[in-house]
Length: 176
Image 1 (spheres, rainbow, N blue to C red):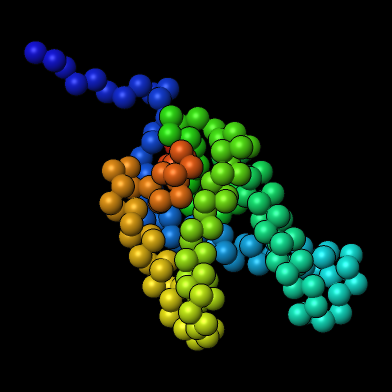
Image 2: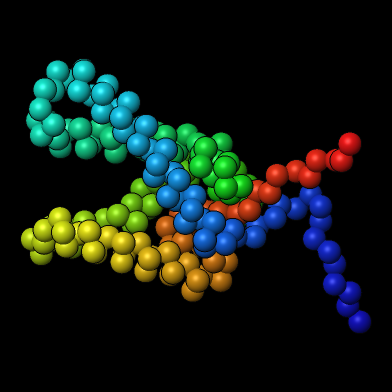
């Protein structure tokens, strides 16, 4: 007769947050990135003396890609971005350990799966911005729902990068 053992209090809780909470965190992250884009865009425009928004736009897009890469790689290697702290979510490797810089960078590159398919389709088919406004939300919903097919409820880019999002519930404070 075997006895079920309780999880060790020292073992990390690898329970995935609900999809609703992860998507709320995703939206909040997007709002916080507005500040990063504003500061990085201002810095780029100042350093390159860009006077018109369409001048140097490909260089600015590349610059923002690098800035986002630094932002996410830095915070994910520490476990959480500000939005993730707010929503009590942490990113770890599949064993529950903190991410290395290399794994965080791999997750960043693979996380572009959120954006590239609708952008690539819009470009390849010569669709308009109005078409993208329909494709993008549809893709995001589809991509998010794909996580329900993964046995640990993780997003595709997390499964490919060897990472996972887990709950990081705040410690219980003793009553006074």
